[in-house]
Amino acid sequence: MPADTDPATGTADDDAAEGALHSQLARYDDSPDRRTVFPADADEDDLLTHWFTADDHSFVNLQDLR
Image 1: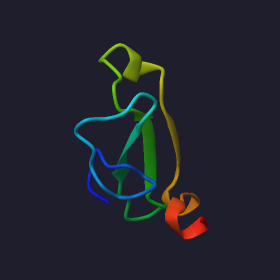
Image 2: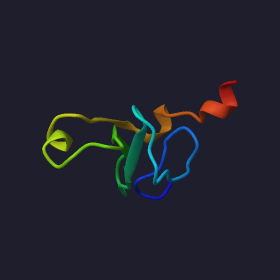
Image 3: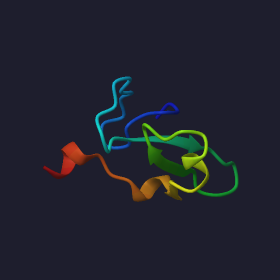
Image 4: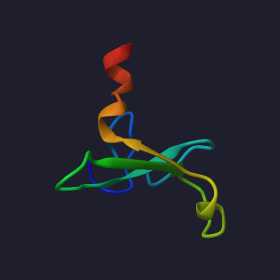
């Protein structure tokens, strides 16, 4: 998934709704890829504390679960 995408749909949302999340994927050669999720409307200061990271394979597509 490209950087700054919605982890649930895999699409970018330029007009993020309140509470919307974006994510960035970090790819690694010798360990699992990691995805960091953060609020779409976070400013520079909020990005220091408003995020979480997990192995990319831990995320699932929301549409697949409906």
